[in-house]
Amino acid sequence: MNVAEKYKESVAQTSPAGTIDMKLEVVVIPVSDVDRSKRFYGDLGWRLDIDYIGDDYRVIQFTPPGSGCSVIFGRNVTTASPGSAQGLHLIVSDIEAARADLRRRGIAISEPFHDAGGIFHHTNGLGLIGGPNPRRNSYASFASFSDPDGNGWVFQEVTARLTGRIEPTDTRFTPEIMNVIRNATKHP
Image (cartoon, one colour):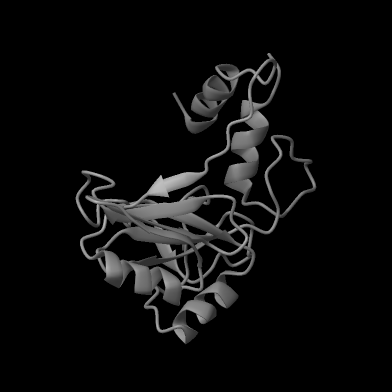
């Protein structure tokens, strides 16, 4: 089954009729040193929402600027191994500006990269090319950084949102993404 067929199958399994809105609100990330992590996420410029200390636990919540979803970490909030959260995506409208902001804050971040296949970056590093997508197509440029425990974050540049319907003359997305969406949304 090719990518377009898999996408079409997953779309067919979800019916918008009668669904209830579900919004991703919180992602729990595992850390080893709560105070060090609090400093790190504060240094990113994220808003501190809560720092609650209970008898046998501590919960800290931060929200990235402009995000409807927050991260929570602390003491006794997860059994996951520190650093095991990977591929956490932060959507930015300008990958270079986002990288510059982190560097200005003293945060180490990768150079921009893009996927040779034009769909999504590979976790194994295969098919990755240095630099942002040459055409700066939406969803096609990335940069990565990690927190002190190794939890992995990825900036993804999105300048135009996919709608599930792409006109043939639309050049904001890579040709590969355009073909997958077009093929997946064709009516039988």
